[in-house]
Image 1 (cartoon, one colour):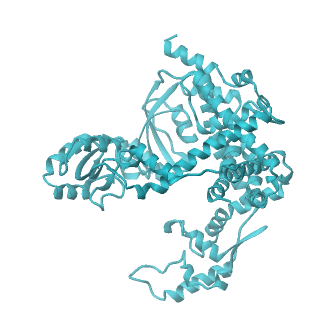
Image 2 (cartoon, helix red, strand yellow; image 1 turned 90 degrees about the vertical axis):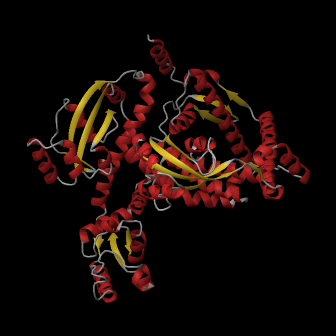
Image 3 (spheres, helix red, strand yellow; image 1 turned 90 degrees about the horizontal axis):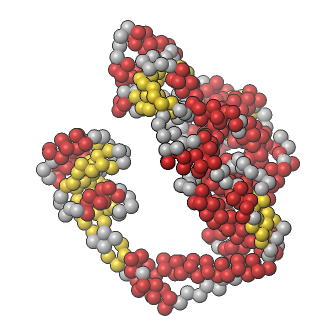
Length: 578
């Protein structure tokens, strides 16, 4: 099998899981096309457009897009039929791939049963959400770790302290130094549940009691409230609102389900293993190093042998976590969050988090989901897509013959594709506001001074240490900077340039002119292009041959019915001022 086909197969599972986990079709049963004895339903099309989040400007645009995607699905079904004709369902590679992905589809069935089936909102809930979005709020908050700190902040506010000053002093929100706690304007649905519930109950000028969320404790100050102007109609907003509610419900349900599993699969920490690690650390670090305390929450895996790594750190019904696996997983955890080896409750929490997927696997197997109809359907669909992929990439006899004459002709007739475009070696100073940029520009009189200012002032993450050196850039990397650079010559400075909400000064160190690449350096690329183009033509010929002998019926009226036309009628009314 070609490498391309193998890579596609490896990606199929992620695609299928995305389809079946996030898909929540609205029109199951509406058959829009039949291909032989196979059929395509409106839900298949809904899933694709819902998942991609498409918003169409008109009814006609959506009709055309759905019709185009239906053609893609028809071709996919023809490939599956062709794969069955070649008995690819019994090919060893297909069987291996499907066997290796079964557990993921079992998890999908578990997810559908425990989470997704309970996350779908009622019509009344969607309408209530829409009603709430008629108003927006401007608010600020102070986020702290504990209720006692929140009470302390609240007492100071009651004594007349300035909200913004306390936000700068107390808040753990990462953006507080930039915005002094200002959350800006927001409508219902854009904040975490408890925060928005509290904020929308408040009047302008009010300050809340401490509000707990997953991030900590919030003191909220509502600055202003106002009606939302030019709000889309209900039908136009319905799909987006539904998805927003589903996402919120899923997060809540997953949190509750995880708590249930934590009780169902209690973690037992093996204290002798913990004591071994602490003793080993004492042996390795008999004295503190450079005044630092001896580590108690981690040990270098290289310092333990195979037998020591095989010690069990945590057990639960149906599984366990070895010390070596724990230490390897711990590399992804910030040192400040790692529990010491004598903090058994915290260790149990970490072991549960690390083994969560394995515990879900146990639940899926124990739940009998091998007999679930959706599990069987989804697994079969994955298998058929794998078969179609193999047929598309390996089994259709393309006989693509690319000659050297073909390659040279393409090189001669497509100079724009073979040319490396104009590019610039730029240095940049990025700041928050235009006034600062203007002030900095006045202080710069040379390339050397530009780099010194960049090393101190630029806000682009990671570029202070390079003195603002962006390297050689193309037009698609930083379009605004590239456009400004085109009007300059080497050794000149430009700016301030509005760029992604900030302002930039740039210095051109070098301008690299456009140049045609040598034939030999692009020869293989051209062969790939021609192979793909000719292969596509031959594939379309194969599709035409299949369509001659496989009966295909497309129900255009049903396809039209699958579109919610009301949202476009509402949009037209709003735009016309009706």
